[in-house]
Length: 209
Image 1: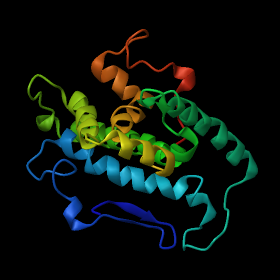
Image 2: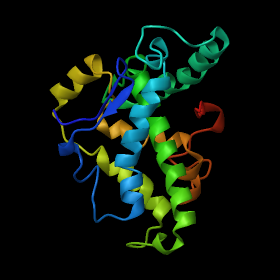
Image 3: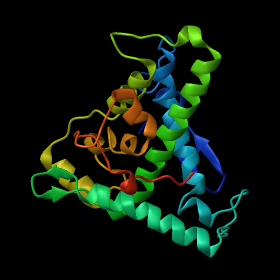
């Protein structure tokens, strides 16, 4: 499998060279394409170092819970929003995503796209000449499109039933948009307002870091 990952024992992220190709990375791509694809992947993996799994290992990989209890309580309250969001999503008719199983990966997606979008905005401020509209889309809009396209896939119903029950990663169709709904820049980029299909009420949005 060609995939990126976080290694808690080494406190490191690992991205094999074969992963650095479209749609995750394009050396000829515009800033949005790369910041919000491979950049978001890097942010996703970094987030794992500070989640419910990463808190069980310290900076040199020793098994040690370094969180204080108050932070843990607040963290669980926030991630509960992700569990409810995923549970409401129908993978297939009558089959809902497993929010509890996928909560850590879904949170890493939220962290990844937040880091990527923030980094893109800083980059464009420093390099305004690269803040180009392409195919009628702004860099901010292309950011979220790049994220969504990265998760495009095709799968049989039997496979979807299997991974929904066993895989800590939600199906690609869900990951393509769910994390973006927690990022304020998503609403700004597309002018999303209350009542629109992609609107998520502010009280249901996660903001941890």
